[in-house]
Length: 257
Image (tube, rainbow, N blue to C red; front, side, top):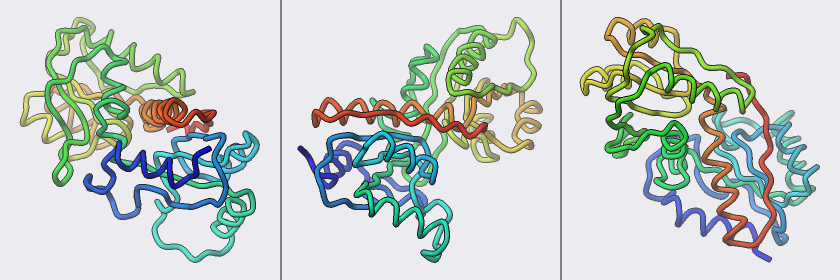
């Protein structure tokens, strides 16, 4: 049976974690080591006390997450933080996290899988961050309401609902862009306008992005941060199961966002 380091090394090579830039708190890769073999792997969007308990209940020896252990930045190892670490150590559960490297992966990435689920064929990137495009974009000729309905189905499966900026009932989407998670901000709205993108599908964004997008003639479909980022981590778990012959289980923990 593999050890957590074996799985982590394979995922690092697959996702190019050493090459893809990310926010400092992402700390992609193996975040918490373990001593024993790994027979069962749990996957989840977010690292949390709830997810730790669910992973232990599932008898997992390793937890793969999209949002890792350190999103809150530097914290003293006291209180809740201590309890989380102590629980992981006492049950010998490793933690591996992949943020932007998972978002951008062409096969297992959140954006690629969301485009596929929506029936869209990417031809370019979107949402530039440092040296990479986090999202995807492309051309289409699809009814915008149909596109929103497909996004709504995904959101419903994850226990959420979409919000879309207003659009006419006969509107067509001809140039789209996708950025999962917190995909709508002033920069991505501006990028969409500059590139002639008429429809954006994102996870979430602040109120002002909806106001700004409407003034620019862009429809934004907010399909849920959690919902749009369940896709990649599920696919990564399936990959690990095939590659290492271990059992995997997705731990569903919707946030409502």
